[in-house]
Length: 256
Image (tube, rainbow, N blue to C red):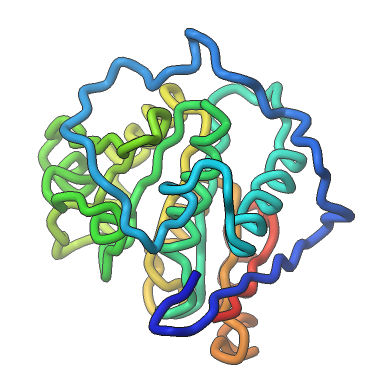
């Protein structure tokens, strides 16, 4: 897999993880009760070729295998008896660290467990998920929170258990929207109707949006980029995160 002619690799830095299991203890096969809940789907979108896992069901490249390893570790960190969806917020200090692609890949990997999975683009500053999935960026999360419109969820070709919610039109007041009770209600709706929910967010060291979301979602994965993200940026992100009620599941160092 390549981007701009460069090889992409990923190294999993895990906080408190001892090993990668070859067996996902909590992985369950599909059943009649595991289909996407009865929520209107606007259309079916086609993922970009950049998302290799969405196109090749069996033969993965090295990066895809690392994504599956990450999924395994995250499942090992989750209590299967917890009610509601397993929800995760992806945070990075700055732009250009691979956060949005990783969010998409992680959502795809969870959907392959044949469980209802939702990918939410909550980056109101520079959203990417509509581009990665070839979706219209209208009727998204911002419209749901600002005008109580119905969700415009996008199904994904060949991934029956994955749906994508884009940001919608970029609001002038993202922090106010994310702090509104309607966002909290949206989170509860997601929690009740899906098994896995992944949130993409804006860079933490420039905007506080991601911290607001992390405080509500609790589970956080941090993403940095080798030879790109400065130590100061990482330290500042972790300092800000420590003031929240979030639970740091682990950290990813992208190599590309």
